[in-house]
Length: 330
Image 1: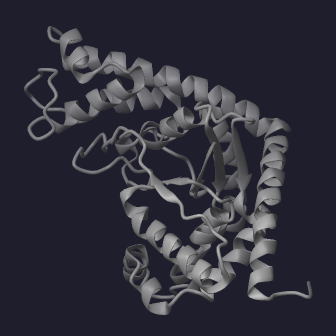
Image 2 (image 1 turned 90 degrees about the horizontal axis):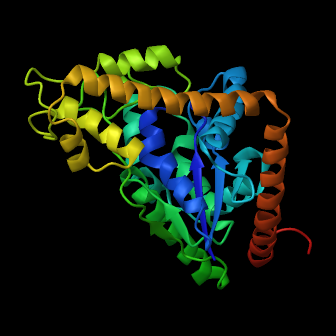
């Protein structure tokens, strides 16, 4: 049995790009018989930058409900909230005390965020990686799905595990990066040279999973294409229509070649109309399930169950660590 863990920050709504690029891979993972999947809402990581209290609380619930609506299944996936398992920050402190300031200051994400946030940079931005290491190492996971921007953090996680093992004896399993099959890379609908992002100032650039369905369809129909009018995949010369074809392919599992053949005698308007309806059908299903979870006691029951399972696993590891370090009376 392979144990895999991933965390997601509660930073508001998620996009169609997030769904096609990442969430679909999680759904495939949870359906593998030899996989135990843990997914947590990383609310402790969210407060490394300023947050509005009520909005953060709502985002945590919204994101949990949305991931369930997308298809995460209780029993196959253990979904929980990071801050509800205090072992995360307890082990995070142990790793802070075994990290060096120099290696934390070299983290690319810290340097990038510090450059953008020139005043009032929190210490949490610096010590983010030891907490992330705790998130992973508490659970003796075998693999961690990582994007390009997280590889450095996983390398530090492995370094901290080896450092602790060498100092106190064998304690932590060294996790490996989990390379999922390449998820669709979905680009902005108004500027296909940029990745689709919910932080884009132009709301026409992205489709959020909780967008009004008619508005989402209009965004597809008004998406940037080109003047040629031929439905052909060519990222360099036809990035707009190529992006829409990538969305179509990811949603229907049709190959790009099959899509080109299907629409070889068609035009952009027809293609966009069909894609808009496909997107609309998906959003309708997700939003219906989301409405159920956000209004139902089931959401709390699922999060309670995930929390209890996570705490059972994490507390045993933390007790072992405390004994080895020499903390407490026992």
